[in-house]
Amino acid sequence: MKATIISINGSNKGTIELPKVFETEYNPTLIRRAGLALQTTKKQPTGSDPRAGKKNTAVYVGYRGVPTPRRIINTEHARLPRLTNRRYLLYGRVAFVPQAVGGRAAHPLKSWENIVEQINKKERKLALASAIAATANKKLVEKRFIVEKELPIVVEDAIEDISKTKEAIEALKKIGVGKDLENAKNKVRRRAGKGKSRGRTKKEKKSVLIVTGKNSPILKAVRNIPGVDSVTTASLNVDLVAPGAEAGRLVVWTESAIKELGKEKTTEKTEKPKTKETKPKQTKKVVKKEKTKKETKTSKK
Image (cartoon, rainbow, N blue to C red; front, side, top):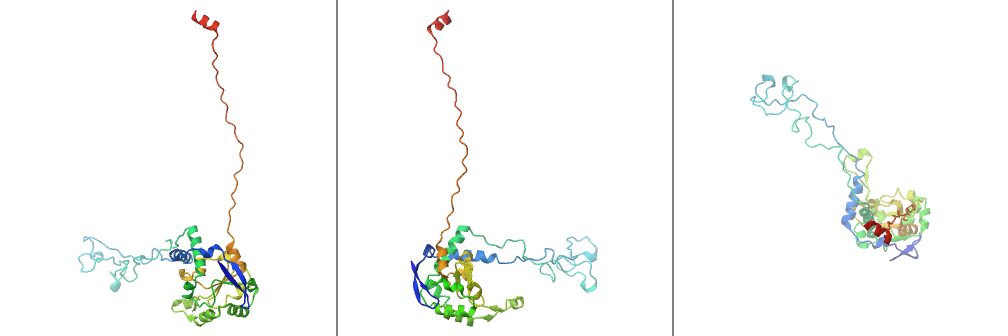
């Protein structure tokens, strides 16, 4: 499987052999599982005070033989815990139970609960490989992005040296990603809800992902463009390649990034240290001596 290399000016520069990762079978269920497992690691554990709603003197007296001020049974009131240290109108007010004003929560959030979903290492690697292969599937990418050229889009390494945002936008337009950049720019909108007061004032549409072989200036030059993400091959994950746990993102690969993907990690087998061979103990063979004729005669006597 080969792909054409595009120069910064937009002209074809040659072809490159794609690694075996792009031949991985598309597995949407595994990609979704890996994406959700990665998203749960970003959640902050929340919970309420275990004593919330219980800091009062509300008591339920469940028998009749008590003084009238403390008696609850046979008083034409619901049998619920009531405050004992209040006077006048507040005397006997229901508290502590979930249905009372200021009472405890029925099933509160607990900060000690584990909210992180686990996934096996091999499954996570397979999900990432499947998500990478889905970036070359035109039908999947066209559902969410505007595709102008054949996929996958591979660019020469000269794009990694661009250090200005204006130059990066011009280069991306010549490559064939300009329409999707404009689409993402027009869909920047104001967030609804309380997130505006917590620093998250805007919502953006996801656009191009730029993958480089090593840390280079374009990674910083691109970060202010709406919807654009940039990363090295070593830092790739399912959340970047398949945002929202759905595969099929528009990705721009550099030559060096494709070569880095093709490098298979080989684990060298460590030889066990040689130990001194211990020779087995030789057992002495007991040889029975044959009796001579003289010894047999004497024994008979």
